[in-house]
Amino acid sequence: MLAVDLLVNGLIFGLFYALMAVGLAMIFGVLKVVNFAHGEFYMIGSYAYVLIALKLGIPPWLALLLAALTGGALGWLVERLLMRPLYVGHGDWSIAKDEYAVVVTFGLSLLLVNLVDKIVGPYPFRGPVLIETARFQLGPVMLNGQKLIAAGVSLGLLIGLALFIKRSLWGRQIQAVAQNRLGASLAGIDATKTTSLVFVISGMMAALAGALLAPLINPGPDVGAFPAIKSYVIVVLGGMGSIWGGMAAALILGVCESFFAVYVSYAYRDAFGLILLILVLLVRPQGMFGEKGREV
Image (cartoon, rainbow, N blue to C red; front, side, top):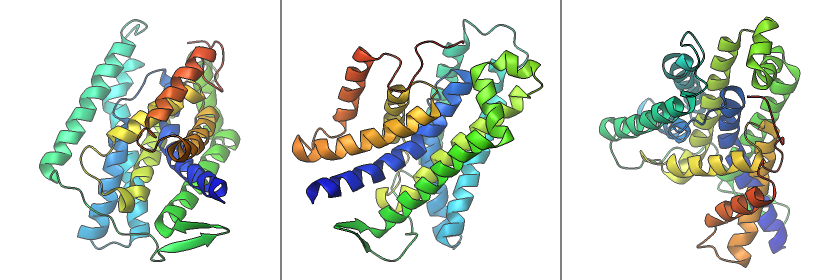
């Protein structure tokens, strides 16, 4: 009975992790850089959901959609103003692009955190729940209603994203640009627009993760720091740039953390991901689902 409870709760947390991490994996897959402001997309989404629902009186489900659009708009703006110099009209970035991306995204992270702190305030807000039912009975497991509905939405979004990447024309273009940007451009794919689309999707996913968990986490200006760390761990575990690897690694990490917290130590539950990361990198440096080598 306990094992089933731990498994279900671990999978639920894994879905939340995957929703947050998949956008980061997509950005690395296309640009080969790490977005250090990814946690702030999560923070913006949670704040957008809470403020739109509470201050404007908009129904929670509509506020959830508007929070996703806010994250997507922010992703588009970041790509257009800050990331596009990496690959449009600025010559050879083979040496300096990593340094540029680190400085710009880290600076953006500090800017957004302090901007929200000054405009909204340092105090956490509690968002409205998406469903009024407090508890659900799922077989032998009793689950929080908000957590269950958030997990269901996360699962639907991840399945939708997987189908979009695998089946749609835009999804195939994203895969082509991730594999070989120059080759995709020569084949007639607009790599710039594809990269912009990746940032929009990444921003929407991270913002949705923050919005879905806003009723549970009481968001503050620095609420995105911890999910961002989890996302970095998951992206490396799954294989840098691998969307499918990131999803699988998130579920594995969620389940392992759930069992580790009960059978080893709850106090060190969050450290388990870092321990697992070290062990995986020692045995398989490219990550669990990564390739041994790829063209850069």
